[in-house]
Length: 384
Ligand code: OOG
Ligand code: NI
Image (cartoon, rainbow, N blue to C red):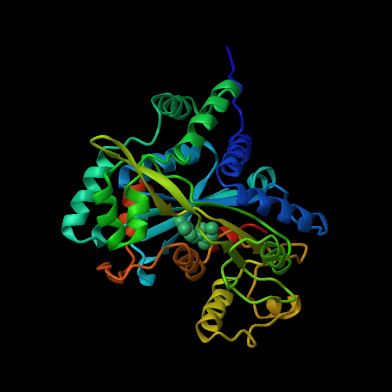
């Protein structure tokens, strides 16, 4: 009997993460500056899991695209954890975070992808039809990639050579293609409703809109970013600086204005699109549901003085998770309020938007994806 040797999903994910980083560095040079800053700071700190730790973000247009991406990511050992409702912040998307779910998985490749799906149901009728027509006409994965996906699913894995080809095709899904998929008037009508809708619907694929290395000290990184002349966001999202870092702190340089091309009867016309940026993050301790409720309360009141800042007290009051050696457990997820802040700092404000504040629809998201999301608290509770 022949036994097939498969490349491990954790290894495929490491290859994928590295290839995405190489691609983004070539596409967005300021991201290279971030990587250099983060590398310098991390070299002075112990305890950072891996130099290559990072997350990306993508925005999908349809249920079919989300279901496809879920299958592609499963081959890379990436699983959907939690549901993020961004409609409460007036953004017509809802999201999940694809990430590893085992310690082994994080140790080999701690890569995550924040993945959003357009809420077509939040668009006015005429624009919804325009968006649906444009999205139905695009196909985001190559035939070669799709064939390899079917092979991986049928055989339960991919050989080394097939795995390398699959990673190459998967990375191409998220590449920047400056030639739009709709005409300029359509782009402008989508933009007038909401810049996020224009970004999701107008292009040939779901380009990655940022890539975020993890840094040991975000305050130091922010100062170095400013010194390098990067146009950074004014505030760091998440909790303030603390003795025992909790959850997630993030900041970003603002999105670039990039040339994009629209087909006309006589050739191409160029305009500028603002979507892609670079972000950094510092991760702290994962909080229990009780700790998270206290965090949300402090955030709403913009006052963290009531949040304990010693390991002893966090443990005594059961606010954070601890492993069997008494160490805090790293927060591996995202924060909806921070995510909304990140989205918004990188979108041109529009005055004409009719998109209303919405309510979440986790059931619809899961139906679109073809499986339920995992619960982050369940994962932390069993990861000691
Ligand atoms: C995603 C924004 C959310 C984060 O780190 O919270 C995010 C997006 O802009 O598509 O990436
Ligand atoms: Ni991000």
